[in-house]
Amino acid sequence: AQSVTQLGSHVSVSEGALVLLRCNYSSSVPPYLFWYVQYPNQGLQLLLKYTSAATLVKGINDFEAEFKKSETSFHLTKPSAHMSDAAEYFCAVSSQGGKLIFGQGTELSVKP
Amino acid sequence: DGGITQSPKYLFRKEGQNVTLSCEQNLNHDAMYWYRQDPGQGLRLIYYSQIVNDFQKGDIAEGYSVSREKKESFPLTVTSAQKNPTAFYLCASRTGNTHQGDTQYFGPGTRLTVL
Image (tube, rainbow over all chains, first blue to last red; front, top):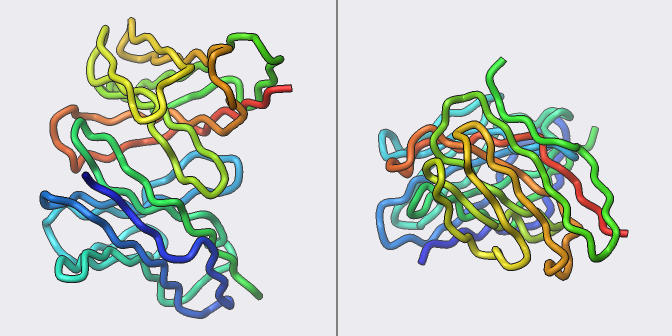
C-alpha cells in the first residue's frame, strides 16, 4: 500500500528565510509525487510534480522539490519565503486509477 | 475559461436531511473525484469515476452516493446515514484514466455544515 507522511503539521519561518517542508512516501512501485498548495477556504493548486523525468523538479513561485529514492523523500523547498507563501501544503502520491493519497498537510506561517 | 466549478460554496443542512453538492468541469476530463477534508487529516477519497456511467468507492464512501450521467458532471449526495458530514468537500478531475502521473485539478470546494 502507498502512503505519505509529512513531518511537521506546522512550520514557521521568517520572511526571506529558507522554506523546507518534508515529505516521505511509501510505495512498492516507482511513485508519481505531487505537491499542492491550499489557501484558506479554497481548492488545491498544483505546485509541482515528479514523474521520473528528473529528480529535481521546479515548480511555480520558485518552489522546487528533489526526489531521493534512497531516502524515500520528496521535500519541498523555496530559497526565500514571502508573506504570500503562507498557506497549507500537501504532498501526495498517485495510486491505482489515478487516485491521490495525501499526507496530513503542513501549515506554513511566514513572519515579517 | 476552463475549469471546475462547485456549488454552493457554503451549505447548511439540518440533521436527517440529504443534500447534493454540485461539481461541473469543462476541461473534457474523463476522470473525476470527490474528497473530504477535515482539519489535520488531509484529504480522503470518497468516490471516483473514470468514465461516464461508472464509479467506484473510495476510502470513506459510507453515507455518500454519486452519479456520473454526463462527462462534465459528478454530483455528490451526502445522505442522512453519514454520521459526521460537517467538512470541506473538494471535487477534482483528471485528463487521463490510465497514466498515474496526470495532474488532478481541483475545484474551489463546498463547506458543508450540519446544524
